[in-house]
Amino acid sequence: MALVVVAAVARPGAAQQKRGALFAVAGGYFGTDLYVGANINNKVHLGDSWTYGARLVMMPQERYGVELSYMHASSDVSTSIDSIAFGGGQQDRGNISVDQIDLSGLWTGYRSRTTGFVSLGIGTTIFTPHIPNSTGPSSGNGDAHWRFAFNAGLGAIFRVSEGLSARIDGRYRGVTTNHATGGGSYCSYGYCYGYASTIYWNGEVTAGLGYTF
Image (cartoon, rainbow, N blue to C red; front, side, top):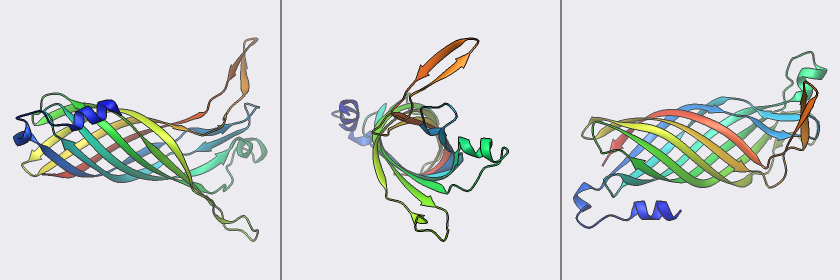
């Protein structure tokens, strides 16, 4: 956060270089195991899906900036029991809406028609489960859960014209789950390896167009 604040403060004499851009972005959300039980065959997995949202970038300094980002995805939920008990097919376990709000610092190369950047940020991820319709009382939407998140990424911004820019991004995000999501072991060739994690990881690749001001 200290680095983000430093990046947001314009240097003396740099006001004439202050630029910003508002991007509409979309791409792919790549989910992983949200929960891993004590048995390696006991997992809850979030599937890959489309994602979309918006990113506001402010560049008060020549090579440093701040980005506020919102992204939404909806991932199908599957469990390891699906492939064991149902002959490899997945049952309808519903889906989870994933809303991601991030504040990131951007470190760029010198600005030109194509400018690469590295991003580091923190924020929150909101998980909202949607249970399949049924005759039982459990159908409908579950409670939203807000969790602390952090991310790192690489990307590039392309200046198309004076008022139009394009961008591509790749990001890797960690989300705290507030409880141990694993506590089992993996055995191979006579050796067993323990694992445990309180972090849910996901990847994201996006592209977008933006208005530069």
